[in-house]
Structures are given as structure tokens and as C-alpha cells.
Image 1 (spheres, one colour):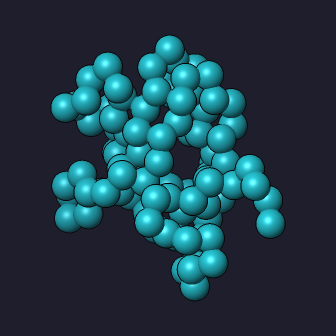
Image 2: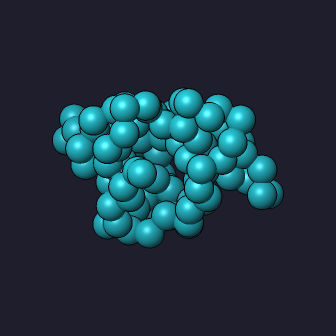
Amino acid sequence: MDIDIHYPYGIPFYADIKMIRVYFMNNDQDFFCIYFVKNDKVDKLAGIVFAGDKKKKFHFPEKSKIAIIVQSKPHEVYREIYLQDNMIYIYP
């Protein structure tokens, strides 16, 4: 088991769900939060990427749609993204 892999909150690493590997980089001074999007609405918190995190590795369920919300603008969705396997998502 690789301890560098992060899983969305509430989804255990042993769940019988097809997962995809994605990476997040944060080049900003603020952290950002990753939320699941369900029915075009921001849903549950999936993870947090802190300032300066370089290539933080996550496993997300296949066909996940997420929203990125920056700590400095907590009521505004920065981006909504359909995650793709082995992609690196860089903020900003």
C-alpha cells in the first residue's frame, strides 16, 4: 500500500469501486478544497490541497465530477471538472 495516495473523505481505500489516479498541484498561497458535484450542485467534501503541495496523488471514483473552491473565496466555485485518469490539475 502506497501511503502517498489520498482517497476522498468517506471512501475507504479498500472499497470495491473502480478508481482513477489524478494529481493536484497548488502553486498558490491559499489552500483549496475539492468537493464532489452531484446533480449540478456542490456536495460532500472530498479533499484539501494545501498551499505549496506539489503533485498530491489522489484516487477518485471513475467518472467523478468535482468542484474546486479556494479558501480566500469560500462561496465561489473556481472550477468544475470531470476527472480523467492520470491527469495533473494545477491551480491557479
